[in-house]
Structure formats: structure tokens, C-alpha cells
Length: 166
Image 1 (cartoon, rainbow, N blue to C red):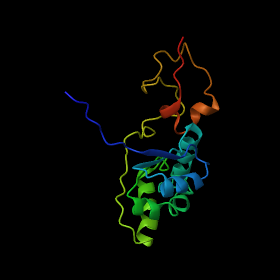
Image 2 (image 1 turned 180 degrees about the vertical axis):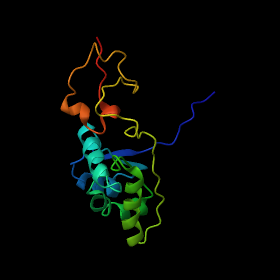
Image 3 (image 1 turned 60 degrees about the vertical axis):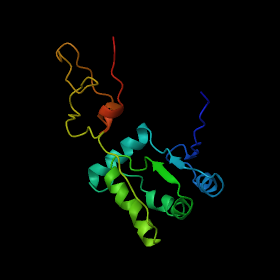
């Protein structure tokens, strides 16, 4: 039985944090012969900032530079047939999908834009009450009732807050 060779899938990473420059992403699109370009732009502080923006504007919560950052990349994405994967949607991926579609329409590009949701956990959160990692309250609040540190009061705390163990 012979060895069957599979076609290679070429993946490039054009950003590694929220403030990263996108010139390398453009270069990868132009010269990398990529199947996928990843813009990884999300971390704890980014999701917290996005969640705070969404609290003041329910249509916000995504990277405020999303449209400006995607617009120069989209023509090359369409030309080369590269799939762009990003988490620039932060705390509001659905709204980010709508924002990403605007420059595509404006540029006359026929692109399919997909949005992944399902990690929204802020609705059941009570910022005034400490909870375990699964959201259940601490069993005996009378025994353990420390003041909540500032980082635990951020709106995205249940997603990212480590659970104390002792």
C-alpha cells in the first residue's frame, strides 16, 4: 500500500495582537499563496475593552478600527481566494460581521462573511457576587467574602477570570 500525499494547506498569520500592524498581512496576501490568513487580535484586555464599549453602545464591542483595517486587505482576499479568519469582532462578532460587509459591498466584492457566536456569558453574571468558574456562587459566602479586585469586576470576567484554588 503506497503513501498518499495530501494537498498542502497554506496558513499565514498577519497579526498577533490588537495593535499589530497589518502591512505583513498585506504582504502575505500578495506573495504567500495562502489558503487562509489569520488576524489574531484578541486577548483579555481587548475583550474587556470591547465588552465595556458594548455596554455603552449595544452595536459596538468590536475592534473600532475593524473597517479601516480590513478594507485594504479585502481586494487581495477576493483576488487570491484566501479565507480570512479573525477575532476582530471581540465582544460583538455579529456587529463586526456587518461592519466587515460594508467595505466589501463598497468595493463591489462578492465575499461570504461568516460569524461565530456562542461564548457570550455576561448576561447571567452578577459583578457584585464572587462565583466559581462555572458560574455557581461560592457555597458559603459567610466563610469566604473577600473584596472583589478590580479585574474581577470587569464585564468579561467570567470568560477569563481564573478560579482560585486552595
